[in-house]
Amino acid sequence: IRDVTTGKDLDLQIPYTRACALAWLKDLSGFYYTHYPKPGAVPAGDEKYYRRVYFHKMGDNPDNDKLIFGEERPKEEWCDIELSSDHRYLLLSASLDWTKNDLWIRGVNQSGNFIPVAEKLDGSFGGDVYGNTLYLLTNYQAPRYKIMTTPVNNPKMDNWEELIPQQKGVIKGFKIAGGKMVILMTEDVVSKLY
Image 1: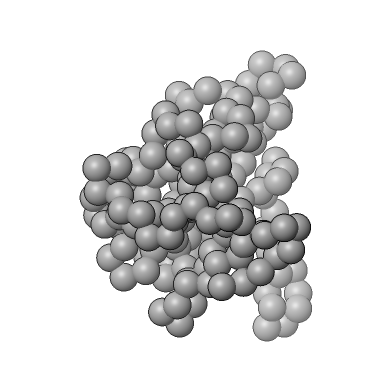
Image 2: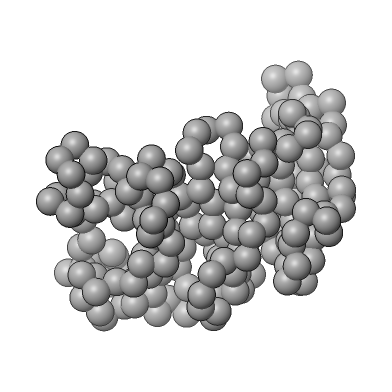
């Protein structure tokens, strides 16, 4: 970790974080990250499995970091963690292949289980929060992707509403900035922003 004010690296090092997902708290007091097991903690040959999510509080010993997600999950599962752009929610995804994933959400200041958004569905899911709305980018029943909305406190599928339907081009992603949504779309091999 580097102190960007001084340009100096801190003494803190957390090993076994290959291809790490990292989500800093807004006040920089800590971060969520993905971590692999230490050698000897799992059977030999399984060290590249069991990717789990932990929380590190700045100043604490990383050996004491709290496991947030992954206990009793399949060893092959790939999990990721990110903060919503307003820094109020954690978005957690987990997949066993690259074509679909499950998605959960939880308030940053909440503890306990994550709230399911999409589980065991044939599609890819990602999102962001603005106000009290969760915006979902998904290819579930839309191979070129669509954007759905749902209340952030009750994101079950029954509450999903289509905001931007599948287009001629492929919706590659979106960002919310300044109360506006910017959409990246690929049409006829050309990337465009809307």
